[in-house]
Image 1 (cartoon, helix red, strand yellow):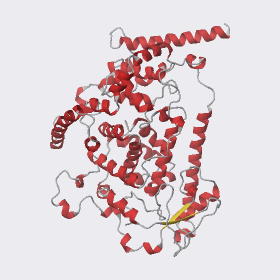
Image 2: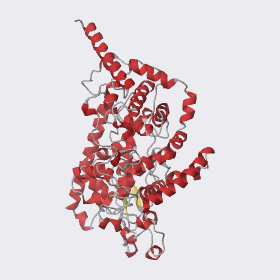
Image 3: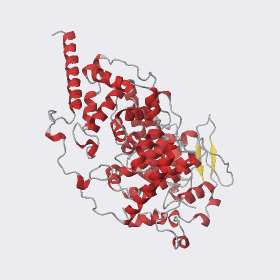
Image 4: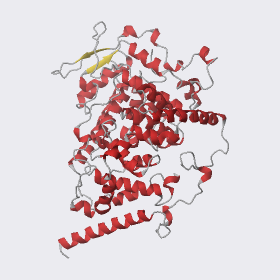
Amino acid sequence: MTDGEQQEALVKRAEDEREGIFRRYELGLDPTNKVDSWENPTFEIYHITDKYGFMHDSRLPETRDAQEVHRTKIEVERVKKWVKMLETWPPPPDKLHKRIYKGIPDRMRWPAWLRLLNVEQSIENNKNVYNRMLTLAKKYSTETRQIDADVNRQFRDNLAYRERYSVKQCSLFNVLNAYSIYNSELGYCQGMACVAGVLLLYMQEEQAFWALNTLITDQKYGMHGLFIEGFPKLTRFIDHHDRILSKIMRKLHKHFTKHNVDALLYAIKWFFVVFVERVPFSLSLRVWDIFLLDGDKVILSMAITILYLHKDELLHLKDMDAIIEYLQVKLHKNFGYNDDDAIQALERVMKKLKDLKLDVPPPAKSNEFPTRTLGDFVEADMEKKIGRRRNDYTDTEKQVITDVISRQEQNAIEVQSTVSYETSECATGDAYSMKTYQSITSLATSPANSSYSLYSNGYVVTTPESVQDNARSQSIHNLSYLTAQQQSYAPANGLQHMRHSFSSESDSRNRLDLDQALEALQRQQLHMHTKSPSSQGVYIIHNGHHQEASDRNGVNDADDDDDDALSVENTRL
C-alpha cells in the first residue's frame, strides 16, 4: 500500500468513526442504540437527589428544617420581583446588582441568564448559523472523539446527564461539536464541556451555543484566552492571583511557597469553569450569577475569598497533598459557610480589592481573543483528520512549560530566602527588616521572573519604629461583625451567626470585620524608597529619613512578614 493509499484509508477510518458516533447520539434513548454496561450508573435515583438534579452518597433529609422553609418563602417572594423586573428589562444597574448578589431564584435563572448574556439577540442576528455549524461538524469535525469521551463523564451524578445518550448529553455533544467548527481557531478544549454543561442545565441547545460563544468571545468574560493553546489568560490570572496573595495574605502565601503549593495546582478549575465542582453547586451558581453580571474580575476575587475564609485551616496543613486535597475535594463536599455568608464575604473582598487597585489584572494581550472570523469554515489539515498525535511540543506549549518551571524556581528561591532569614541576624531585629533581607537575597541570586513582582519594580517597604506603638498591638481576631452590645439585640439571621463547621477554634477567629481590618491597614503610614531605573542596588530605609511612595498599582506593602492585610490573627491595627 502506497503512502497516499494509507492516508486515504486512515481518513476513511476517521470519517467512519465520526459517523458512527454521531449516529449513536441521533438515536439517543432508542432501544436499538447499543450502550455498554459500564456507561450507565446502576444506583437508585430519587432518594438522594437534590433540587439541582445532583445525586448524593447518602439519603437526603425527608423533612425540611425551619431555615430551609424560611429560605423557600424568601425565594418565592423574590421570584415575583424577578418576574416583574424581567418584564421591564433592563432594570436600573443598582437594583440589578442588589438582586443578583442576593441570589437569582433558581427557577428564574433561565430567563435571567439569557438576558445577561444577550442570547436572544445573538440568535436573532445569526439565524440558521447553529444548524449550519452542526451540519458541517457531522462531516468535518476532528474533535468528535474527544468530545464524546468528555460528554460521557460530564455531570454523570446529575439526572439530566445520568443516562447515556440522554437529551442533555446529546445537546452537549452537539453544542461542543458545532462550536469547534464555528470557532475554528479555538476548536475544543476539555474545560468547555463543563461550561456548556452548566448552561444546558438552564437553556435549550441553541441558546446554550450562543451563551457559550458570548462567554468565550466577549471581552467581559474572555474565556477564549483560557482555552486557546498556551492558556495566556490562565497565566495572566495566576500571576495576578499570586500578586494579590503576596500583598494581602503574606503569611498564607509564604506557607504555600514553603510547601511547594503553586496556584496552578488548585486554581486551574477555579478559573476554567468558574468554581464548578470545587465548591458546592449551589454556591457555584451564585458565583456564576455574579460572574455573568460583573465579568471575569469576579473569578480572582472569589479565589481570594476562598483562601481568606479557610486561611486558618490551610495554615494548619503541613504538606502539599493535604493542602491540595482540602482545596479540591473537601471544600466541594463541605464549604463550611452557607451561601449567603460566602457571597457577602466575596462582595467585601471585591470592594477592598478595588480600593487597593488590585481587582483588575493587567490588560489582556491580543492572543486572548479570536483572530479568525467566527463562522468561517476552515478545513483541518491531514494530521488532524487522521487524529495523529504530535511527537513534539509547539513553540507555545514550550513557552508554557518554561513559565511553569520559572515559577517553580522562583518559589524555591523564596523558600531558600526564608530559611536563610531564620538563621541570620535579621531575625534579631538588629539589621534589616525581613522583607528587605529577602529582597536582597532574591536580587542577588537571580532576576525576578514575574513582571509584577514587588521587588522587580524596585520597592522595599518598611514601617518606621515610631509607628509600632501599643495602639497597633490589637489583633484582628478580637474584632467581630457585631459588638457584644449589638449582638444582644441583633436579628437571629445576622452576620454574627456565620458558622464554620471545620473547627470550633476557627469559628471565633473567622468572625472578623474585613472592612475594618483593611481600612485600618490603609490608615497605616507605610514608607518606602525606590531605586532609580539605572541602579541595581537596594535602598535601606533608616529611621528619620522616610519617603512616602507607592508601587505601580498604588498598594503599599508592610515590612513585617506577619502582617497580612486579610489575616485573621496576624494583622496589627
